[in-house]
Image (cartoon, rainbow, N blue to C red; front, side):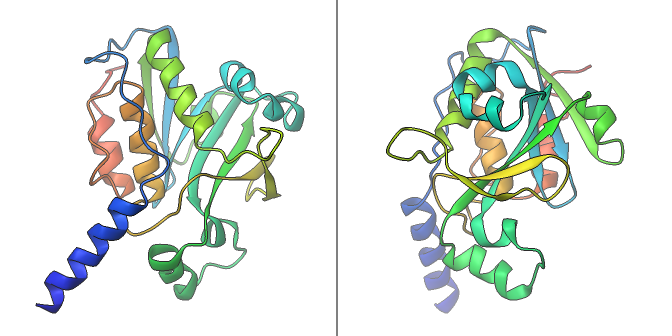
Length: 214
């Protein structure tokens, strides 16, 4: 009985707070055209995306001001308190899962190919066409909170390299994780991935490892 009540509460939380929402794919089937590249990067517990800077700079001009010489951006979404903390604790992890105060996006400027920059991480390269890529850019842009002037909001300096935190849309919780955000992004880009239970890095990497063979 207690287990059933707990599950009901968790799924109620999930249903009430699923921002940012995945976008409906523009095509039913991903073409894997080589027009654009998407790098999926696993850092162990967390999976992020890396894209060339051009289209993101057009969608979010403030990024080109903060990172004037960037060739690529690595982007991840997560809990505001946990992600920005200098010291990870059990208390912060519990608060992120069950009482998050908000979210942030972590943007890292890269001046070399992501595979070269993250040689010690698992990296999967996916390809896509312009229509699906545009939908992905829109999802990422809509994951940023804006101020009254419609500009993205700076928070703390990032955790490695030339990087920056920005205020995000939505709240992290046990069923709305950083890895689920990446799955939502890939679903928005037209890949055959269901974000619903993509809560771990391994579940995301397994879902896309054969999406576009390279």
